[in-house]
Length: 139
Image 1 (cartoon, rainbow, N blue to C red):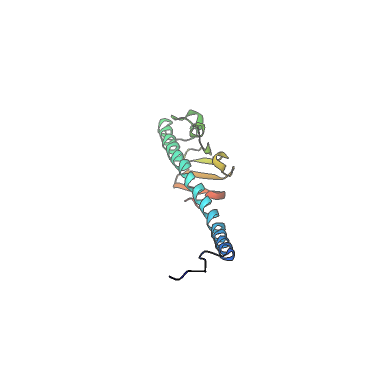
Image 2 (cartoon, one colour):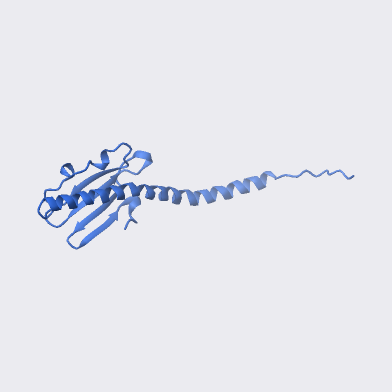
């Protein structure tokens, strides 16, 4: 029987190269991952804004076809921003006879960037959505 004198294993150089490659890949992938996670948290705001929109439409019908008296305080639902663990605060503005704007502003809960917003604008011609900061891609 022959005895092996050569030991198997990785050299220090090989291990360092692998660590560098993993570091480079992580530096490219992690920012995209965190942006995707933050964007997924926007679903909370979109769901709440949809509920607020339905409440605004009920207020419109009760107010004889005008949004001017419909405020966040007198809608038939609680302010979703007051819920425990809410990642957004909500505001209704620009009420007129034919439209309004609902704005969801990100707070710092869960490491969010305070001030990034999502807006839902109702006009006589339709509804549009938009965003700022990390939510700029919301349509």
